[in-house]
Figure 1 (spheres, rainbow, N blue to C red):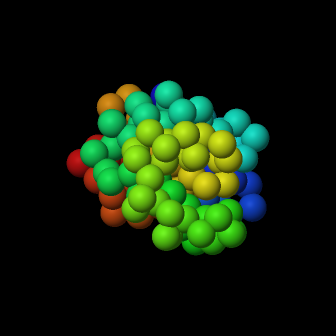
Figure 2: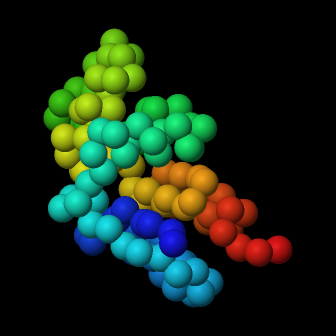
Length: 119
């Protein structure tokens, strides 16, 4: 079963969920603010994704800006970054799409279609 970590007030999340519904893709929605992934889970997702760790950060979010993370992240180790991400779901890029053997950050329709739709 596909998991989608979302924030209910996020317009991109709403668009992504609508796309999943329209394409008949079964999924479970997890509120990223209330039930965000812990450090161990984030480490697993990061490994599955093949993406740079920075792609897991919600760089347009208030928390990211308030904490000055654009300047701090380059100085932090991966372990420190994962620990920080695990402290607050609002720091995590959303929607976070988790399948059996893949993870996608953000909603890019082409990438989601390539991964989820049978051709």
